[in-house]
Image (tube, rainbow, N blue to C red; front, side):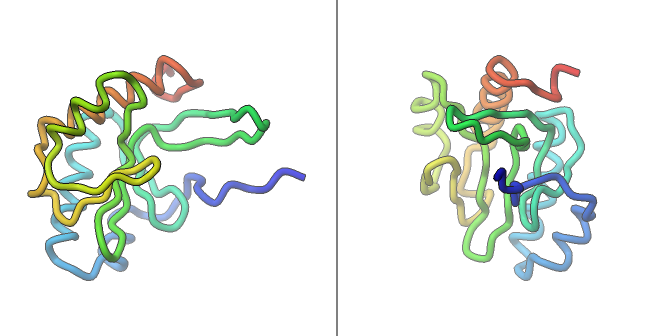
Length: 145
């Protein structure tokens, strides 16, 4: 039996989420700045995905196991400890971009950063656009509509 994905697009207001969930003023400011930047870079309005992810655009994926679902092209989550950025390009330029990104920790499929000032925003833009390009080229994608 197929399980329902927890990370699905919702109708929750992004602004209401940030104002109610984010308790540190710096993280709140960084969240609103990321919304502004990711909206510009992706061409999509922010939407809530699951309870805590703010995503831009969407694409459909299918794993070799047969599991499938939808996910945002790029996004972030203002978690309690750090901002979590969902902007990783699995392509060949990923390493160069990550080396120029700034101060962060890398997870399996995300980047953790304490504050936006720790990052080179020009590099984050390149990484975000590379991620969008990779997903658009390799998946059924809302950015093609």
